[in-house]
Length: 501
Image (cartoon, rainbow, N blue to C red; front, side, top):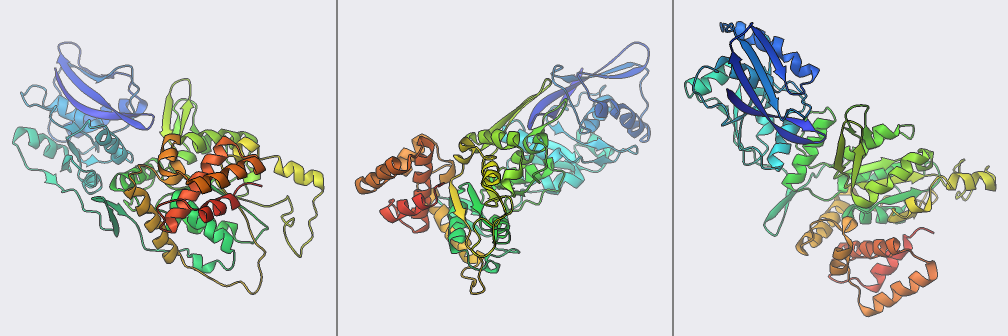
């Protein structure tokens, strides 16, 4: 018996699969066992054609391929190359288990990649389950962004066989350097883009909203914009993406992995993701799901970026209530009969809404056409437990002809990077908006005078325990923006001004 290693996905994490082969006496046959999916069962015909096209004669034996562990469902075409090598080299003494082997075979023996190969190998690398691998040549440039792994690229089945038969030197590629501007803090590099296709310079007026957007970006604090139609809510939300904090090399690879899951070609760019589902989207599309296999949804694809809900009250009640878990715990668990997966949801939640169904309630000139009952029903779509997960509440100002541009995205991004540097220098492993309770006590401590002000606010406004912690985290971010080592009274007062009224 010979064996080699490949992998498959279980949820969002890769699992190592041992591919074993035996050729025994009996009626000639070719079987693949071990909970193989339809795509793997079809690989028998691809493997047969690839071997026969390259002058290999099938032995008149019973060929059995086993994918272990047998209780794990396997999917994908990445097993083709390994299965073909096991059959072709079964009678030799070559050691095939020194490499993890991935590749789909064409009928002529050409080795091709599949769409999830990068995400599969990255997941193995993050678990320290792989050190060297044979991959399709066309995947070589992409997977070489993953550090600490030796990759050999092959274009054809014969090239893969020659690695073991003749010790041939296949195509290799060195780990690429990340060629983006970087912020260097405590010996680590954090990468960012200096391109602003949507610029805050295009937003006129709305000084309070732009200040709140700066705070939200610097600490990754959830934010809600409320205002009349056309006041600039969506404009600001879409420009937030370009001033978000830098990313580490590990985060950059995570973003590329999510692009693979979304069916896109990984760009390896420090531009964080921006997901904006329509309010008519189903719960399964937003949170993930499926009849047999739980798939990733919008909240998972927004990890390390922005999830934007426009027209917030128009989302279904079930979606908004289910959103409380990923907003609070920064992860979500999807359970189905056949699969259960947990994935990270550490994103900046940005939302926008009108003050009433017609949108004119806060307008100084236009008349609101809504009755008190209609307004109350509209407001009641958002429950207090859901709203308690929002850090910053911003009421948009009226648009006037005198409004002018006051700041551009480049200058805002500089301030975000400076605040980010402050947080990293303190030794934080997460940004202010994601701090745990024990970290709040450590990094957001208040002086006696400032603590007194907070206690007075708690008594006056009836703040919940969660609201108190959020105000402390916002005040910490404001202090970072102002380059202050301690939280001062003005920082706390400004944080209180963004509370929900």
